[in-house]
Amino acid sequence: LASIEVDVSSIEEGQSIKVMWRGKPVFIRYRTEKEVGEAKEVPIADLPDPMARNLNLGPDADASDVNRGVEGNEALIVMVGVCTHLGCIPLGEAGDFGGWFCPCHGSHYDTAGRIRKGPAPENLMIPPFEFISDDVIRIG
Ligand code: FES
Image (cartoon, rainbow, N blue to C red; front, top):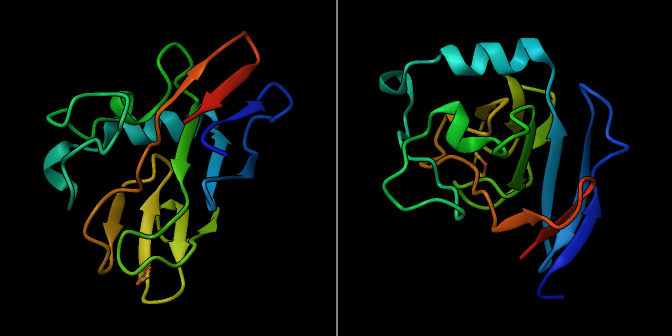
């Protein structure tokens, strides 16, 4: 399917779900206030990949938390769950930064899906998506 629609209203704070889009997993996580606060505080200079990798923004957007989250709903994060190293599927709520951990070669992503440690060269990709109602996003 070129695009999918996902009701995100039932995701509780601190929970995430996985859906499939174009044969790839997409992680949708409703982050806690604490997680968002911590993610916002990370200086861009500390990030191995300073770019947002968000297909909804221009290619020059930086990897600040606001550019990784959902406009108007900063706690929500939507990302393609494919490690940017060699394509394994990272595990959620794992790793040194409380986000995702790729067990294949040890890449640690934070709660905004940004690579923080390990061999992955880029942040997890944010696919094109939009809210089509209060509760539903369309990915793709
Ligand atoms: Fe994820 Fe290598 S594929 S760390």
